[in-house]
Length: 260
Image (tube, rainbow, N blue to C red; front, side):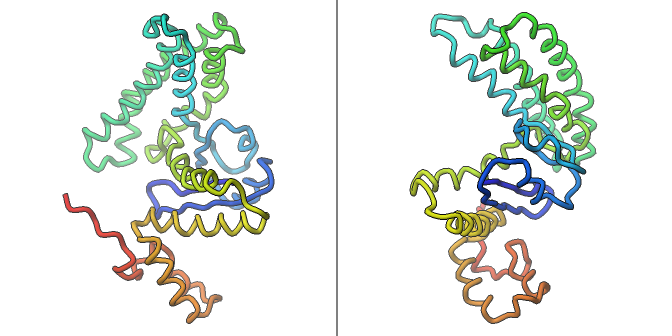
């Protein structure tokens, strides 16, 4: 199940696309005609996509060190290990992002980019120097070696977030969106057919996109079932009025805003 979703600066869209494999031909076909930034994990299937610039995930880089620390014996002082040093670099980048958001109300992409140049770039420079100095000292097939090699191999993608203030440090937005499907899959184990998996992808796309646009999924689906049969489905303008982000969606479909 492939997951695609929009960035935070446009209408929230969550799309699930069922395919029979993890082959790179599937994102190539889905993203045909798209150009711009594509935020991904380290999966090699995205590497030869055309007209896109890949954005790496610092949560994945950080997780490698966290897993290394968890694998160490209980009697080891983890705070003095190389894994802890590597983890600190990644953690520092996330702290800087949080500080920027706290210090600049409604931070613009331009402000975020400027602050990253001042605060994050020195951390990146120090981390790259650390990676290059430690790689010869660590067995490449060890957990720590894997963590170091991940960052070095993904480096050109990990630093892409510095180019545009709209970009995020991690791919957690997509990770959160795939979670509902993963939880559902555990409940019913598997789909009985390809058509069933495709139908599930469509239903989940509608429900999760509705939730991302602050709609009550049950009320929204009821609204669709009641009104879509009455319109011409070839009329794109009419269909646009039923999209989850449309301003014409009635109030009873919306989740009331929480009172602070």
